Length: 382
Image (cartoon, rainbow, N blue to C red; front, side):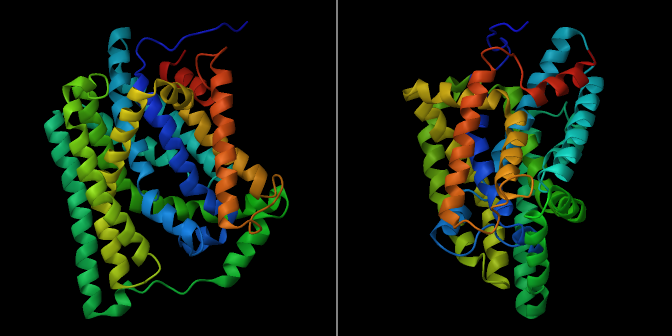
């Protein structure tokens, strides 16, 4: 028998709201690869040149996964408190949770979305476990150092490429591979699975290499914020919200625009754009979060609409992939390669709206989402 349940007292409404908002950006960033898997094969931007691609590159790409990673680090502190209240081992619970995440991520990556991030989160979660006792200030310093070093490495590579331009030249796009990928994606279910199995290992390695360091930095920022209860006690820093917005938008938007201008210019400028974006994307993401919190404070209904999706974020993350597969691949309508970029964004809006509605409906009679329920059983071993 199911019963009407309210969120557990330990939940932080602001985290659920921000997580629900971040799901929209994750979907917009990922759906282009479902719409045309040839981009994944060639490692290029998710949509062809045009106004839609420009907006996504400037405002979405590399911005929302850092929010998601930050929230993972913050939620880790909540899970530690929960384990301590229950008298359970933080280490044992975290190890089981990371194992559960890894298994779900592998299944998700092989069957639905080759760009799955859960396996990376599972591995980085072990690092976060080992660093859980560091002070918030130290966590911020280490995270900032990671981002700074990455930006400097990309800038150094850009400088080196001026000495030898061949260093920064990517291999030419393999049109035959892209055509084959599209044919497999829109064939039968077995064809799509063949594409997944062939592509997933190499793309997973790329994600771990290029997104892993930034994700770890955001984990540490989230850990510091969680230990300081920043989202639970917003009044302590709320007066700084306008300043965060001015800095975040003032530096982050130009960084996003530079990334857009250089994304399709292989060589020195592409590396410069990536170096600048690595640093400024974090600032723009912070501005997004603060702006959202200010909007929700003024219009609480917006928070109530987003929070259910944030409460069942893992289920929504997998649900996005499932619905995208049913629309674009041989699992369903096989529309990959047939829709204009603006139509692809329309599909993203429809998927997101549907999942918001389903999340609210589900939580009327359930405390956890399907994926969250499995993770909770594994984590608590009960």
